[in-house]
Length: 350
Image 1: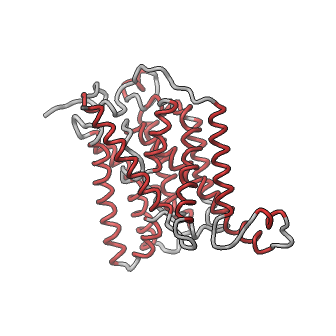
Image 2: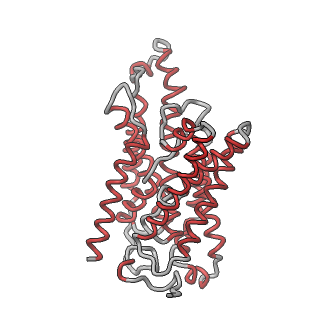
């Protein structure tokens, strides 16, 4: 049986995984392009404010005294919903980037590593055992479950010799399916299937003022990730490389796990699961600006917010006045991009 170290040079079929530092010229994302991307996201946010069953127009906003209902809808529903979309998109995209660096694989994100499913299991457990806990305590429990599930995923990866780039997400999907099956079983036994649907479907239709503010915590974690971005870049080059630079690889991994787990728990507890955002956006950004985390995180945050806003707008326009949940739209688009990345990887291997 092979005792291949995770820090050994990659096999030919694992060239797409994050294994060793690749000597290639860094691609710089010019600041003007980032500013233009930010302006485009602001345009999507402005469009999101005007879409919905209740009529809200710029004319009504310019004359609030004449249209009090429009202002009320904007303040209570539209603005909180748009902020929630932006915060969730930014934080989940950056969490996906961190997971890809820790696992050294581009096909990993909270949805393909069992993190979101284990957070959902934690929410179910606290709902059954301690239903009176406040939302912060529930989110903390969900974050603990998410961290444990992600740590289990990384532990399993360490015990798989000769792993390829495609085996890693398969392991995560299988682990997530196990967590999801356990969650569904206990939810059925305790008549909580409807609550489970709220956690497993990313839906922003119920977001109102006073029900989304927890997502600002995810934004703070995103800022923390940017502050320590260089350490995640080094950790993505392998444990031996990180140790040679005088850094503690286990501490960096623990910090990354904590950020990913808390972000995932906050998003799942507030709006539910939104799949593939942490996979699609970091891969697109990697093709644009390279793998340096400090350079990538601003792009990942901006494009992640734009991606979620666009999915929400599509879901609200396609079947007006009804809505398609953001998680459904993001799942369809993300799965197509995921398949494209897999096929693109196979073409390169061939």
